[in-house]
Length: 521
Picture 1 (cartoon, one colour):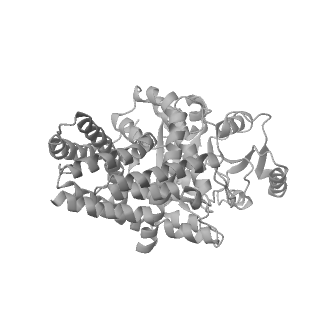
Picture 2: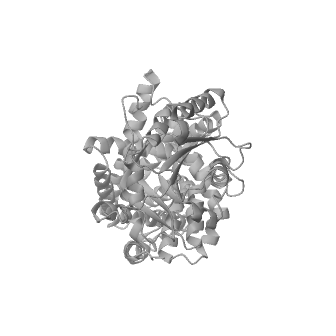
Picture 3: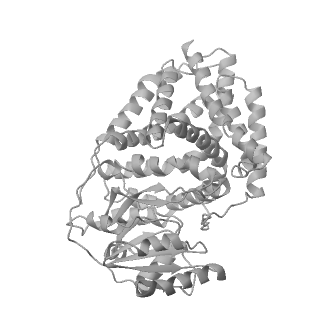
């Protein structure tokens, strides 16, 4: 099995190490007050920021290499045309346009297997009608039980109805270009005995019916697939992402099927590497998928990701870290999953950092090394340049910055609690709403978020310091949590939400300026 090159991981880690141990640590040791609890809290807050900085620099390194590196590969097997079963999974979210894009592939050796877990008569009737028109090239499967989430659905199809050498995983809202399957097959390596899957890139499919939420957040998918993932074929861990992926059936049997967990795709990737099977990322082949139509759907998806990651921590992470996979892949996988562990710590450190900097600012004790504000400024500029590279222009990127800052800040406590809760409890699979379905926010989420926001706003005023705008911006996002559910409406509340969504990002920029001025003096 080919090994991954460690240069990128090592360079990023060296930059972080130099920042922390040559600049930040010697400086923060000066924070030695007569108040021992304050000194310890300063160290704790600093430690959390250092870990966040490591995570940010790691992903920034991959995004920069993804932008400037060369990732073009030549199709290795133009005449290799194996039989492929397209597994279209649906559960009360059937989309005829998506399924039709599977049926119209310009590749001869394939068939569609619709794995229908739908419960409602409406969607079951749609599936039946589609299969009646599609004819022999479409096979319908409905399993007698619904255990195992999406993984159970896929495993049942592979056990009972699929004998093809390769299977293509397709989500219910995914649109495939006509040459998609032919292009994916062409990228199967000649010696593919150790290849478990090929993962393609994705973009957002936008049309006249797309909501403003989908339009503004569209760059997120391009940033992830075309920047963050692009360099991982050579320098990191390539994950299976559950859709837009060609999976070798014999590898599925060797690995032990799809684990019946919420994040069955990542679990499959981890188990594949443990069995010396690898994933291949095919950046040149692009499919189209849909963003959640509104903030409610976004919260459901993020909470599901957080709970699924917690389940991976419990069941899959330790066996993978003790396996024969390369250290480069282990380190990259760890930092890919680390974001969900950091979520509750980021929320906590918003308050802790505000308190510590207030106390130190009042006592005129320097907390920031003078070079750090300059580093933060350059990080913001580089990240904005990356957003522009994945957007249709600077205004699209700027609007994406403000909206993504607000919605991620607002949903982070909910997702963080999901991660903590499912470290000890098995998560339940939450289907992300599709086909334009809108989602109402739950009161059990909205009420605590508003309360947390009020506390953050009060503390941001009482704990006045150059860091205060950070906590105030977070407080506005928390209080606005139920209001963001109206972002896609034309009501007065919708207009108010679309105005206030710019406040958290603006406060972050103000904090950058105030801390830069503090660092200068």
